[in-house]
Amino acid sequence: MSKLKDRIRAFIVENFLFGKDKNFRDDTSLIDEGIIDSTGVLELVGFLEQEFSIVVEDEELLPENLNSINNVVAYVERKL
Amino acid sequence: MWKENCKQSFGHKAIQKDADILFGRHARREKSICFANPQTLIHHFLEESAQSFPSKIALIHEELRATYAQLNSQANQLAHFLLNQGITRGDRVVLILENCPEYVISYYAILKAGAVAVPLSTDLKPEGLRPLLEELEPRIIISSFRFERLLKAIELSTSGIQSLILKSPKLQWTPEACSIFQLEDLIGSESLSNPNMPIEETALASIIYTSGSTGKPRGVMLSHKNIVANTHSICQYLHLTDSDIQMVVLPFFYVMGKSLLNTHFAVGATVVINNKFAYPASVIKQMVEERVTSFSGVPSTYAYLLHRSPFASYRDKLDSLRYCSQAGGHMSRQIKEQLRNVLPRHTQVYIMYGATEASARLTYLDPESFAHKMDSIGKPIPGVSLKVVHNKGQGIPPGKTGEIVAMGPNIMQGYWKDPRATAKVLDENGYHTGDLGYCDNDGYFFVVGRKDHLLKVGGHRINPQEIEDILMKSELLMEVIVSGVPDALLGYKLVALVAPKTNTCSENVILNHCAEMLPRYKVPGHVKFIKALPKTASGKIDRTLCLELLNKNGI
Image (cartoon, rainbow over all chains, first blue to last red; front, side):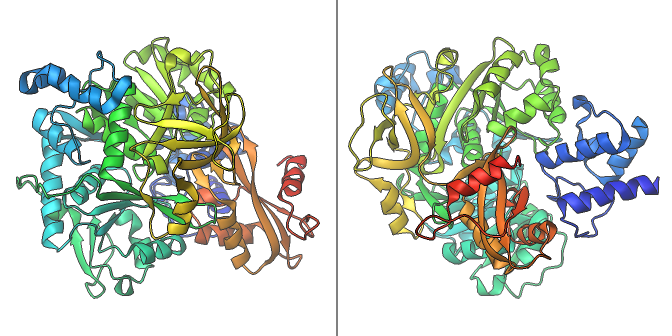
């Protein structure tokens, strides 16, 4: 599980924080903290689909699935 | 209901006459908005709706539902506080707040106190905020915990800020630099009357920043009269009434978001704030639950809705949706057609055009003309006249391309502390939009491009030079150009073509530098390295050739 979390965090740090981990917490709201915007959400979805061979349905583009590291991890685990 | 109230209170014929005078020959007798005792100042929108519909829900945000009476009462409390702080007419009060009830309360409170509301982008970094505060010399900043780190990075003690008012602060503040207040402490349940300050309708009401052609953001000065006139025109052509419920996903600091707030408060309608458009499914769900009647967006909003949301599958549930409106730049024909096909048949599509310098709106395309004039920005809104001129300001016949120039009571007073920039765009012909376009034989206007290099990226007007300046500040590059390549989602995607000083320079280092100094939407999506930029014969960078290079490489 932590490995999955590490991969997701690494993607966010690399792509949205330009490699600079600002020690944001696992429950930090990615939108409220300005870490990602709507384009970023699509990039995150593209990564999840490719990396974990899952399909993210349009109906699943919800904050409860994608708006924090914890939410993303829980969502991916449900999909696997 | 409101119509009935107006009839009882003021007499319907007199009201209609006022509206006819206001809108000239454009006035329609069947329109449902009425202007008894015409609203002449922006905060009258809130005050009159609070009087007409005190218990009506004005604002919905997450779990909160605020009535007009509540919002007006809280705005009065804050206005009296500002006055007690010594705020006088014309003082600038800066707002750095996300869309929330406190934004609305603060915006109207500032206006009630006779001060100037200066909403700033919530994406600003210290580098961008400092020069704005220097030229604005505001006395008070109203903000929230989200922006505490940003504000801590500013030397408030030397900026002349008298008070900082924070919503739900989380960090420790010492009152050495300026007085610190918690917003919640200032807007309790106490009932205070409208301050009714003597304010002329030509008084400066708001300064809204927009990118200028020199790369420096420009503060657009709008009077009460500018915004009130534009608000009334928009209410008229959209046939807004108190039964409307508007979903707002655009920020209030952006002129279109501000316009959505004022127009709906002017008629006693309801505004639903949803700041989670990045997750469009949640927005659509709320549109169904709240039975919203209108939705508004910029081109990328609709691209996103169409390409990555369950919008189409909700078609049968959107029976309340009266219309969708689009502004903020050119939206491709493909997206317009897709949108029309996805929306329920009863939902109309309004294509609109405007500028911050025009308080928001200049033209709209009547939904009846959507099918056969889809590429048009439509015709001028009530009270506005538009013409196409060539370089020397003379009019151009239909079908010929020139610069679009606008005139009307909504055109700004000028740019804040920038008379030279003002003189470049305002003259006896009106406001020179910088947009190139033409008018057809039926009187419909079409925009074909920008006179300068400004780009629209995801609804933001971006000046490449500003980003180029920041990139050069890194001292890693010899030269750089920033341009836009067409992008289905954003309209344009920012790309930088750079000539680095050394081979060790990486894309990440450059982007990290940008991210430190620029809001996210101004950070290029891609950096392409090149040994040297192509030049013209005179030695200047050849932007056209650069763009060709960028496009050729399939970025």
